[in-house]
Image (cartoon, rainbow, N blue to C red; front, side, top):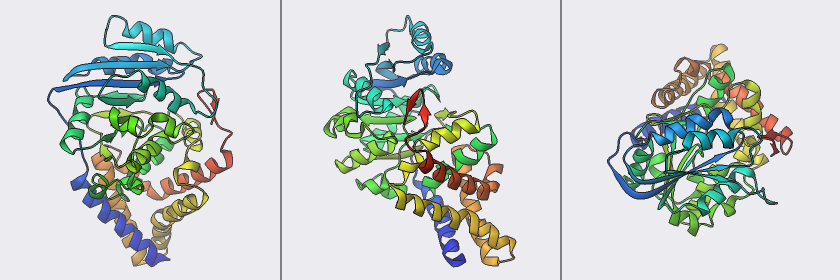
Length: 357
């Protein structure tokens, strides 16, 4: 078992190093002359309403852009706040969402309504808790053009303040950076290479429409990953990128928020029970066995732990995560195993934004 653990830890390090040289990292960009539609679904986001409007209003190098914001039947002051904040800026269009139809989940339905009203050649989906540099959207589109992509997801830097956030958020970024060969992913239409983050997701509207729009993922909890897979199945090209230089996101502010946030989706994230068992096994092999073996004096255990630790440090460096937290990789792995199991136990029972998912 230790030998298998060592192989996986070294493999994770090799893939991480290779990805450092191949990952797309948007930085600055010139003028974008295409018609761009930015889609922002909001449900009970009163605390983010002002900031998301302000971060969008500050975007530069976009010749023809509109910001479509949909109030998804919020029960707080979201609509009033966003309307007042956007007033006077003709680029903003605030829409009131329709009732959730049977068979749909909230975010896919909100994005479906937004995309149906979006005339842009490129659609940019942004979550309410994302904050952008002034050239972020232009840089993302520029990267799409440079690499001939139909969709692109610049993964924002994850703001992590509480202990639970610090243990889980960087680990999830490391998980794809250490397992998906991005050189192949950006050239392939194989759905197994799909990686995406719905916090910041750019897609050509023609590709989205051809692939069936958001109706094709209407009941999917992981709308971002599933949309990436749908696009790839339809022979479109796209991949994830390192968006740490142009965007950041603070998803959760407490352990209970984080636990419920991942409980609604992790059970779906690995393709079923078998996939979840495989994910847990890999976390044990790369997160638990190395440190236990090392503590028992095994040189192979130390080698495995050092390999995965260097991989974590590299990931933290390029994604602007806390380097020290990488040292606690075994704790992160144990917590993620707990969250996967908890997600299966709680599936279909979690309340999120006032809806059961």
